[in-house]
Structure formats: structure tokens, C-alpha cells
Length: 336
Ligand code: AHR
Image (cartoon, rainbow, N blue to C red; front, side):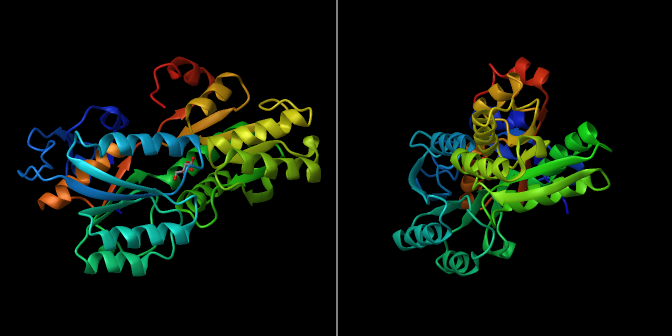
């Protein structure tokens, strides 16, 4: 599948980015757009009313993503943002989207809690003539039902985390436990698949895998259960689908008298401030980034769609990886 990549530099950059509608030969290009501004980008001065259905407030990553979206969909940028956070409840999120349709908003942006179950409400939005843009997570519904998606390559994140584990443990028999993200969510599904591909053929064995729902408390309580079942000595590696669950695992390991990062190695995904600090402190051993700063890009896509400008169906933001030394170098400069 053709992928359009946007660099993290561009994501962290100032306002008024236009996403180059590019083919595989010109991937990564982002141009300044001096025509799109607070007017809504279509030459009118009308405020654009956008309903944003956020997953909830489950993690540090989510807080950074919400802030990025609220900053980008601001009054100064020509938007009236109607914000809803669904507390990780798929039914509540679908109901929020139905409310946006009934309110007659100009556009809807969704960070879908789970992949499945979107067909009907997306069709309803389409029938009402309200364009939908997805950010962060993907859906299993037909891509005819939404205009565009901007986010991260969750499968590649899982592969990168797995490659680190394969390099670290290789042929050494290794008992791994997994802290999964929200069941049915795109990042949980794809990070699991990518990791498993990368460790195939190694001596790493998944001895248990349960959801911690992307929360610190969830990660902690699942890890407490793993320690009760297998003992600190029976676990060599934790793969947490996000930093917050890894941070919860650290609390559980320390409470049981263990030393996270030494007795039990930990690899996580996100690279939010608290996670990066734990990496610098040696309590996490490796982090794959998942960039939450998607607001500017999502806002520009909405303006382009409403202005009738052609947009790509998918925009991927590139992620980095961090060792302890790399984290120490950049931690003070990172915006989240
Ligand atoms: O969808 C992105 C994931 O959702 C982040 O990795 C996680 O922290 C968040 O809750």
C-alpha cells in the first residue's frame, strides 16, 4: 500500500502546513500554505464547527494529543471545537458522533477507541453530508466512509520494539509478559502483530498477555498478577503497548522488591515525558516513539476537505526510537 509520510519536524512545526498530496515518489514533502488561515482556508470568514470524538483520557500520550488538537482547532485558527472524551467506551463514542451529526457540525474528527463497529454511524455522517476525518487510530470500516486519516504506523512501532527485544535476548531463553492496550483497538492489535513478527525464531516466549487498557493503574494491576503467578524470577521481559502501562509495571516490580530495568527488562511505546524519564533513570530499557502532535495536520486536512482540495486517504507520521543515552540527550527539548 502506498504510504504518505510526514516528518516529525513538520508535525512539531508552526501553523499553516499543507499536506502534499503525494505519490510514493514524493513522500515526506510538506509545503507552507499561505492561503489557508483563520478564514477556514476557503476564502470565507465563516467559523468551522468541528465535533471531535476523543477516546478518553487514559494516558499521558492521550493528554498530549488532546492538547495538540485543542490548540490546532482553536478560535484563532477559525474553528469552534465541540469536544467529547468517551472514557474509552466505544458505545459512548459512537453516541457522541451521532450527537455531532444531529447538531449539524461542519466536520467530525474521530480518534476511534476500537476498530470495529463504525460502519453505521459513518454512513449516517456521509448521508448527512458531514465529512469525517480520523486521527490516531484506524477503523475496519470501508475507507469510502471517511475522507482521510492521519496517525502513526502502529505495526512498525511493534516491529521496532520487537527488533530491540530480539537483539537484546536473541537465543537466550526469555520469559516475556505483555501488557496489551485496549482490546480491539488498532494500536493493541497492530503492536502485538508487529512485535510477534520481529521476535519470530528467537528464544523469547510469551508466557502471558493481558490488557491493561493503556492505563497506568491497569498496567500496575496486571503486572501485580503476573508477579503473583510467575514470581519476579520467572519474568525476564515486559513488553508494554504504551509507556503508562510500563510505568505501572515499574511500580508493581518495585513494590515486590525488584529492580525494574535490571531484574526485569522493559520495552514500551510512546516516549512521553514520564516514560522518557524512566528510560533515563534505567527503569525502562527501550522506547519506541508514538508522536501525539497530530492537531495541526488534522486541522489542515479538515480545512482542505471543506475547501474541496484533494487529500490523501492516509498520512503517516514517522516515529523514532530511544535508548537510555538518546533519551538523556533529548528529554529536555521534547514538547510532551
Ligand atoms: O492510539 C495511541 C495510543 O493510545 C497510545 O500509544 C496510548 O498511550 C494511547 O492511550
